[in-house]
Length: 172
Ligand SMILES: [Zn+2]
Image (cartoon, rainbow, N blue to C red; front, side):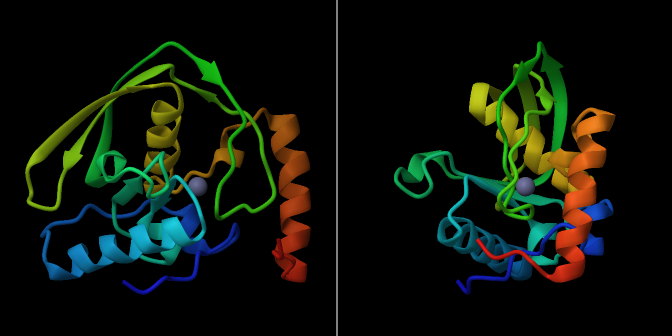
């Protein structure tokens, strides 16, 4: 389960929609293993395949960051099928280190997708888990949380980010 490099804001694969997985074969299973290892090492509570340079619709989430195996979610071809209400909390992203902002997210979501056995899974989530699902599904759509801010905040942030991309300044 090698830990992979997490791509940063500005990498083209993060800004384009990923493609659906057609076959859940051993490559996809090993991709998911790498994603989980990379998420725990970061550490983070979620990761999408494009963040490690693979343009496939695959996400992993674990709000316990490895403390509780029961909380690990691995989802292939995730889809937001229902959303309700609104919430706003600080959010960060492993691909946008050191930036936090509060995009509007639904309070409650229903998400469906496939597990690694190809079986359909449906999750209903609120609070942090709802935000995590939205954040990771955005990733496979090529959308980062900074794209969801108000135009003014977004412009400010993007100016800073562009400068950091240019200078290669991503150190923690
Ligand atoms: Zn992210």
